Image 1 (cartoon, rainbow, N blue to C red):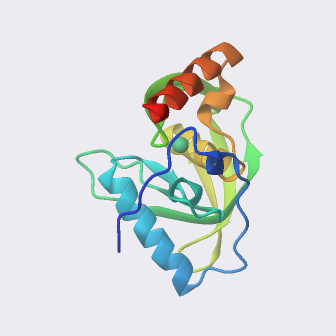
Image 2 (image 1 turned 180 degrees about the vertical axis):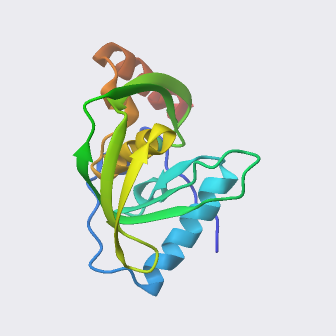
Image 3 (image 1 turned 45 degrees about the horizontal axis):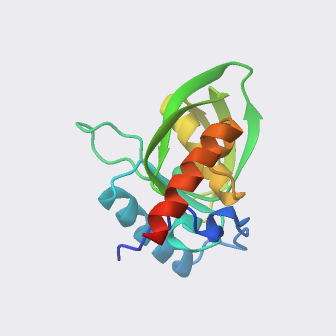
Length: 168
Ligand code: NI
């Protein structure tokens, strides 16, 4: 396993639409392992492959609490197949947009279909933090960031800050 560099704003790859994997192979699992290690090191609770420069539809998540054992989840080609009518507001952040946090409203529960670490098709009912996190990560696979859910003014202010920081 290896820790990979996390891509940050305004890298244009973050706007890329990632490609579905035809199958979960040993190569896929090697990427999953690197993603998990990178995510834990950051530290973060979710990571999409595009955030380490790989435009494949792969996501790792671990929303276990600090005092709980690690509970890593691996998603290949995750797809939201159901959303609740109820919504949940949560102050989101993103490893690709360091130190920026803002409230985003999303469905409070979702059902996700995906291939797991072993390539088996699974469905998972997600609620609470996991529901928020998986929606945030699937957004990444479509080139969408949490700041795209904010007002244009807020978004432009954040992007400008990162463009400026990069020039320095
Ligand atoms: Ni993110």
